[in-house]
Image 1 (spheres, rainbow, N blue to C red):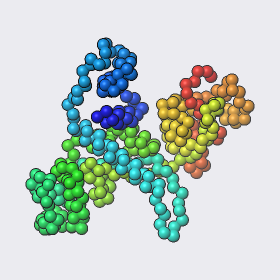
Image 2: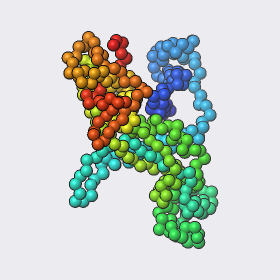
Image 3: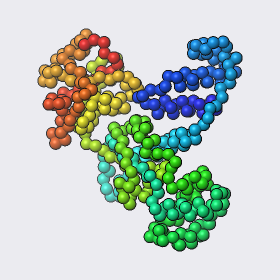
Image 4: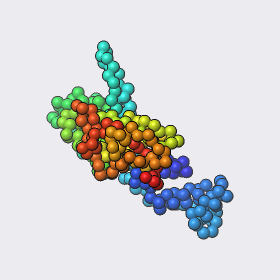
Length: 354
């Protein structure tokens, strides 16, 4: 139980992302954790108890009890973790894809965006198969359902006749899911809104995949290709948006940061670029503020001898409301009407002097 709590804490922290964790929930977690550890290391837990502002001794505190478990939330959490795990594997396999025989290996361009397709319900013919399987199981997952009997039964259904080549593989797949779970896997739709769960956790999906953005769409937009998408099993399509590389330079001493070639996408903002920079540079720790600066004089500014006493001299901070544009033909990046031929300066941490 204790280690499951730690796992739940780590998952919660990861899902919160930039929003941050709830202070009251974190304090409650520390309180429960201290009580659970108090029989093993009472002195440390007693100290933690006092730091939490609790009165009396922790040894007199009541053992924490579990509240009402919301199984719907548990199912949604498991669904999200399984979906993102599947997305990560597909992204990894995309990078490891081997070229066709005789073809020259192409330079792999990492995807920048993705679209997740969600199915509201199964296709009509699959719904017929699920309803038939539910009848044959007779409410007991341990019932032996013979494939031959299923095939005969499917042959009587006019809705599935033109899909007969797909029917039995689908039957085998669903029988395996029943064996691993229960008969609820035969439901033709989920009891909760799959699209809403993904939408509420879109920032986590973007972060865990290391992408710039993720869109959500219905599987019906894919036509026949959307048949592979089922309720509870979304599919993802990756794509790469065009970009132009811009040189970003850090002018701070002792940071271990120097020059970075950073791709700039159309319509990028300071927030987009600094988030991308943090993914590229390991020396920029999560949550560290990053500021971007441009040369006030784009011609002479980069040629001026730097002075460490006035590191921001000749620089103007790029504001959050400003956006970047790119010209692929000329391979240039612009900030408003200004062409950034000399790149940008980036600085980490809070600035105290100009």
